[in-house]
Image (tube, rainbow, N blue to C red; front, side, top):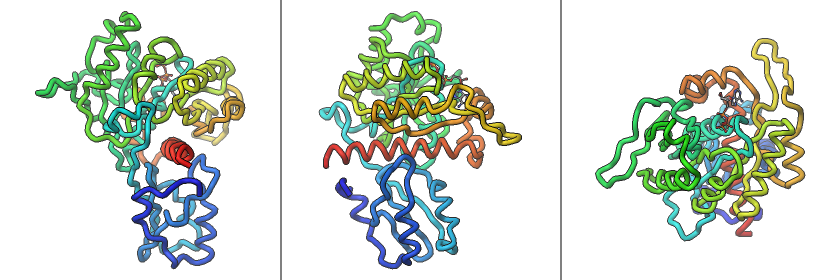
Length: 353
Ligand SMILES: Nc1ncnc2c1ncn2[C@@H]1O[C@H](COP(=O)(O)OP(=O)(O)OP(=O)(O)O)[C@@H](O)[C@H]1O
C-alpha cells in the first residue's frame, strides 16, 4: 500500500481468524471508484461481527452484496468511520472546517446544488458532522432543497451566524439571511465579500466535512472564492451533454490552474430509469463524463440517474435519503459520497507517498 496508516487504522487489530474464502472475498471488495482493495488490517472480526474501519465516511449499505455472500452468512457487517482531517489548499488556516469539498459546475442547471445537498446528507447519514455553505449567492437553492425557507439564521452573543440544522446538516445560506431579490443584484465584489463573511462568521460546530455549493460558472466570483477558501477537494458536476461537458472542462482547468486538488467529476442526469418497467435511456447522450474524465485524468466519481422522485423530494425540501432512506435511488448517492470521501483520502495519501 502506498499510504501510511492513520491513528484510527493502527488501533484496529488485524484478525487472523478469517477463513481463506472470506479473505479472498474481502480482497476482491472495492470501495466505489477505488482501483485497489482496502488494506487487510482495515477489516476486523469481533465474534459474529465483521467491521470495516475507515478513515472517511461511507455508508454500511455498501457492504450489502458482500454480506449476502454465503461465506459471510451468520455474520453482521458494519462500517466504523473515524474521519481523518486532511490537508487543504490553505495549510496555514486551522482545520476547524474539517474536509472542505467544493461542488461546482461550469454551467447552470446541471444539478450542482442537488448533488451537493444529497452528498452532504449521505455523509451525515454515516454519523459524520457535516456543514453546508450555500455559496450560490445569486440563486441560493438550499432553503428550497433542505426546507426552512421562511426561517432566518439567528446571531450568537458573539455576533456569529448560527447555521440552521436541517436534516442533521448545519447549513449557512444567503437564502436564510438576505432577501433573495436584493442579493440577485449585488455586484461581484459585494457578493464574494458577503460569501467570505458567511463562511468565516458562521458558528460552525467542529465539522468532519463542509460541503460548499459554489455559484455556477468559472468567473471572478468563483476564482475569488477558490483562492480565499481552504479547499480539500473540488468536485465538478456535469451532464453528459456536449455543451455541459465543454463548460465542465473549463471548471477542471480553473481548479488545475489554481493548484486546487480536483477530486473528480460527477455525471448527473446520466440516464433515465423508468420506475415502472426498468427501461433505461441516455437522454443527454452516453459516456460524455467518462470521456472528459479520461482525457483530463480525473476520476469519474458517480453517474446519477435522472429521476422524478429525486426532483420531487428536493422540491419538497426533504431529499430522498431522508424521506425514504430505503429507496433504491439512494444507492448511487451513497456510493458517490463514499467515492468522494475515499478519493479525498487517497489524494492526500498519494501526496505523502
Ligand atoms: N438527477 C436528477 N433527477 C431529477 N431531477 C434533477 C436531478 N438533478 C437535478 N434535478 C433537478 O433539476 C433542477 C436543477 O437542479 P439544481 O438546482 O441542482 O441545478 P444547479 O446546477 O445547481 O443549478 P444552478 O446552477 O442554476 O444553481 C432542480 O429542479 C433539481 O431538482
